[in-house]
Length: 74
Image: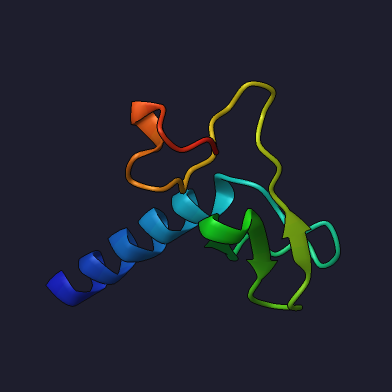
């Protein structure tokens, strides 16, 4: 009985997580692998590369450790 409840809760949680977030424009799958350092998302189902551009004025996610001190420009 408890195993059924746990399994049902897992399915419910997985469904809620899977319904949130972007979809692949090619196949519609929601499982996207985030490649933050390359600013890409890759669909795990069909392998489509999806560009992940920065918003206007958004700082890059990966900078040299001294970039915030002004000695290194991004």
